[in-house]
Length: 305
Image (cartoon, rainbow, N blue to C red; front, top):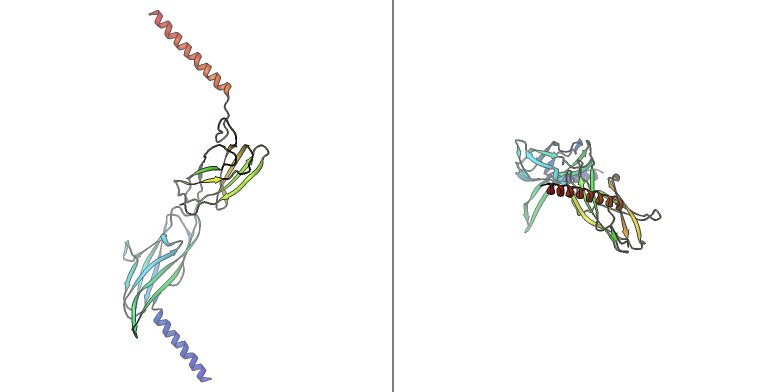
């Protein structure tokens, strides 16, 4: 029994010594949590790096995840110049300031990532002709919750390639977004087509914002690639296209326009503008009468001279 206890103690001791040797690099492990962060504000956090080795070390400092582009690192005595690594003496601790700048256009929500300190690989030993390199990396979790007033405002120029298309030809639509709010938007498009002759919905589809396209930033305009809507099987006649724009599954804007399939004659406008020929004829007649009066006066003045 004593042998078993001694053997167990020996294993634990060896494991402890091995861990002490391997994990010679450390940093404060408590997660960084920033709640109710406001867009455009800065938040400073302390990073403590520990070197337990008997020699100095070169330590890289980096960030990962959703917050990677929000943070910059500084030495405590110089908040003007950013750093990405430090030299730390043997058995020494060093403090680094991490300053998080919340983007002006980020929507409310929870964003996570990591602050990492990494000891650069170095040649530790050369035993029996084999070269051993050891790299150490310690992560610290970061969670930032953005709050504050979120203003959503959007205008969209909906531009069909044509309001009068041939049967079985696609309906191509351009979308130019104008962001009037204070957060970046990636609006989802819910598009329906209704047959005006019987009020039946003949097409219904959701178009996510293209992943490859940049978001629409506040006070900016951005056009995404045109959407091609198939009209195969639709009969000739008048149709209404209803478009709903969604942000976080909430409706923020409604637009619509009418178009013809297989029709000839005047092209329909966005709101199906109708021309009243009686009004146009009356206006032309008034212009002709006014012109006749002016010419008659000029003729009388000329004769009197």
